[in-house]
Amino acid sequence: MLLKTGQKTELAEITAPYAGLPLVTKLGAMSQMIAAAESAAPGMQVKYVVHLFGPIWTAPIVLGVLTVSGLVSALLGDGVWDALSAVSLGVVTAVGGWHGLRRPNQTMK
Image (tube, rainbow, N blue to C red):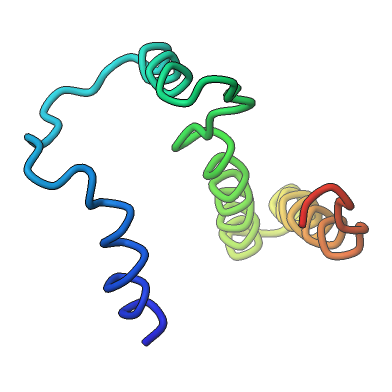
């Protein structure tokens, strides 16, 4: 319900200036987009740009691969396979514990 309200109010307001303009068919370079944004809003400085894949998905994919490899190696055999399983799942557990127990960053609100 909240999403529907936002679509009818804020989203319509945000997209109103672009009504009737042609759709984007070719992506531009990031430097060109930053320059256009800075020229459209004088005094604004772009501090960072979120990359779609790298910072967002790298850690979850690595943790997923470690989890699967740890579980599969536990099923495959004894000895070395158990050690590989313990190390893989231990890393995942340590990362999860570290993120769960650390204090939140005070600058993010």
